[in-house]
Image (cartoon, rainbow, N blue to C red; front, top):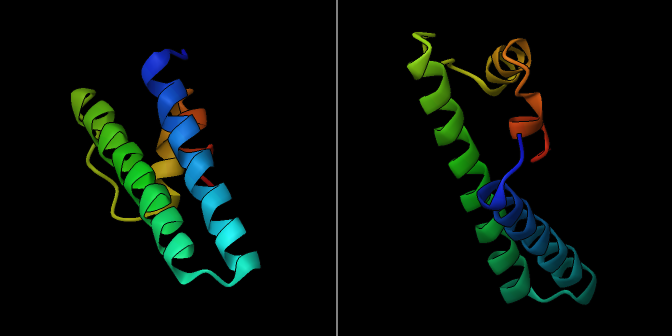
Length: 85
């Protein structure tokens, strides 16, 4: 179940991760910070999206990331959340 939105989200995440890793190697704190911001924004978007999916099915919103991952796996949507690990 991939579409353009998920593809762009994944690209944004990878871009942030790459920027963070480059900044770490170069000891560039600005690059590290900008990379972290991209990764954090992407991850938060995936959490919110998973909340929406679970709520739509009447499933209580999980209190931690491990439970969220387990629930999404039950729905066959583990790729949505686990790709950000």
